[in-house]
Image (cartoon, rainbow, N blue to C red; front, side, top):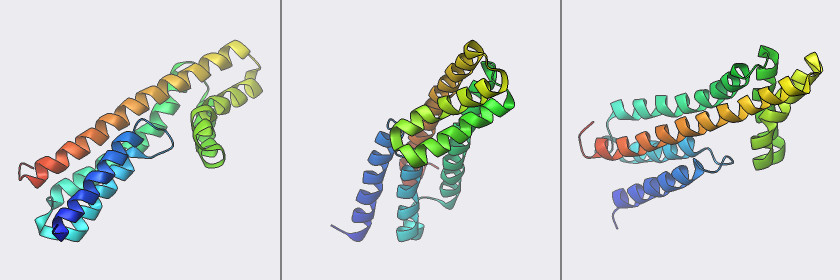
Length: 164
């Protein structure tokens, strides 16, 4: 096996892990897929993908992470949370992921919104509605991140073949 084949195998393995990671909130799927693109480009240089595609993939990976935060915020706001409650959802997701892994990543945004909204106006119904909005935003974020990960992986192979 040549070194370029070995690097391609590593990239494909990272793509598989990244794709699976798109379904598991604990793994940053798009970042792992981007790492495969990065390693391939850095080790193989001009024999790899184009620099244009490398930068497009980088923007897509960053966009996926930003959309994750924005959709969580949007979902909470759309379902009635104050801007403070929506920010509590984003913060709850970050803190939950750091301290409680997968359960914290899933429940953290909801707990963050509920805590802030209950503290602000003590209306359980409104706070619960805002929490549901956080879940809806999370599902939209999941979909966007999955699509962007698939686009990055497919784009890699198109770029490698000289189409991009």
